[in-house]
Length: 213
Image (cartoon, rainbow, N blue to C red; front, top):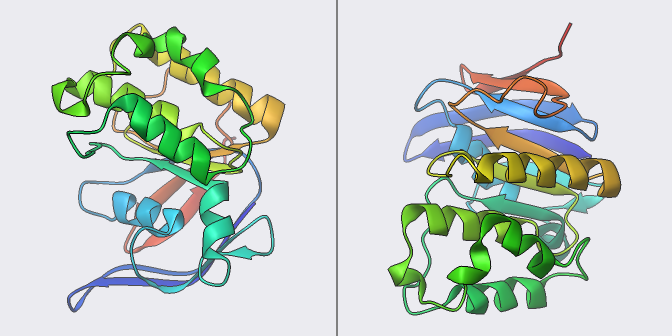
């Protein structure tokens, strides 16, 4: 599903991540680590959003460096604190995402009502609360036909009613479409809410995979 090859990331002269190799099979992975260890940086590298040394490969052959357009169709990312141009509406952003990707696994407009998104979708995002922005960013991550969805602190600012909906989206896309997930969260994932394959612990600039007993 995912291969990291000789990953190095520096900010100025400070080495943030140094991952010689990581090979993961399809699954749902909970990414853990203390503040400032590089969790968000790691997700942005995998999403192809920031420059780095090395390469990331999905589906065995699709390289973030050699096949950037196809790679970005296969890897979706929802930021912890999403920011969008304030003059755009949620509908504008949804059209942009769907037009840039393959035919979707699912019709996300049928998913949107489950989080109450249609009520604000046609409003400019400058009027959105943090919870509305989070719901929109999560819906956008499920557009197209990704093989990997990266969710950075997805539970932050979500109301209690939306969290079980998100869990159901994750379970459904994983079981029905074989989509893998990386989820960073300081909040505990409720027991049995998700079938977590393994925990990825980022520490000392590298990643350790911890499988459940």
